[in-house]
Length: 119
Image (cartoon, rainbow, N blue to C red; front, side, top):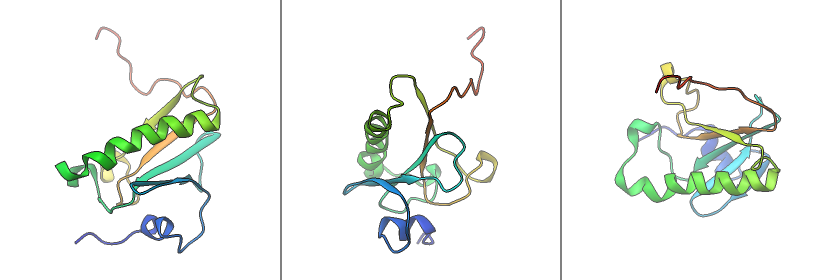
């Protein structure tokens, strides 16, 4: 069984967080160390440690992460100018909390992560 994380406690509202969205499948809250003017973490309410641990039964919750991201981007006023969604996986991917989560970043030009020249 996966080890509980700080995100599980935020989901259950046992520790404070600036929650901007919560429903039966996901919880979204502002990152405490924002990397952009808007930096929100969107997490499934069930503990899935990494992308490598996803199963077919997680598809509804994981797909819901993206639809909720679009709704939050709209309510934050960043949908029109654009935003970035990032999911890190394991140490080399930059994952720090082992409860799968998606970063919603926006509010300023972020620049390209990867170049697709010649692709």
